[in-house]
Amino acid sequence: MRIIGIDPGLATIGLGVIDADGSNINQVVDWCTIKTLAGLPISERLKIIHEDLSEYIKEYKPEFCVIEKIYFQTNEKTAIDVAQARGVLLQVIASANISILEPTPLQLKSAITGDGKADKRQIQDMLIHILKLEEIPKPDDAADALALAFYGAIHGNEAMKQ
Image (cartoon, rainbow, N blue to C red):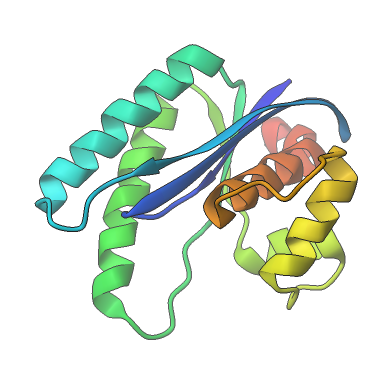
């Protein structure tokens, strides 16, 4: 199964694609980011996200998507902007008829490291080991997206049955 992980954002969206057979990772296919410029109107930034993700989906043809639920404690403006971008991401995925799983950051960290309070470096170190990579994927958003794709390999079958 081809799985896409998406780390949502407005300025930077992480994308990671893997091929997996159950929890066995066959291949890391790609990782990258979609970037939008801060000076652009939000409507233009959302359009860029829509267009770029749509093209990415056409190119890599994922069968399953894992997109992180957003969680913010302090900055409401950032949370609203990211929520709008996440809505566009979900719409593109749903329009492509791709099943979606939405773990929280705690669920993701627990699945990857066994510790729901793990930091980014701990997750990245586990990714190198699990995905048999030679180095940490850059930027961090892309590494997070690969972690989400791996989460989909672990939990995708049960999610698709629901």
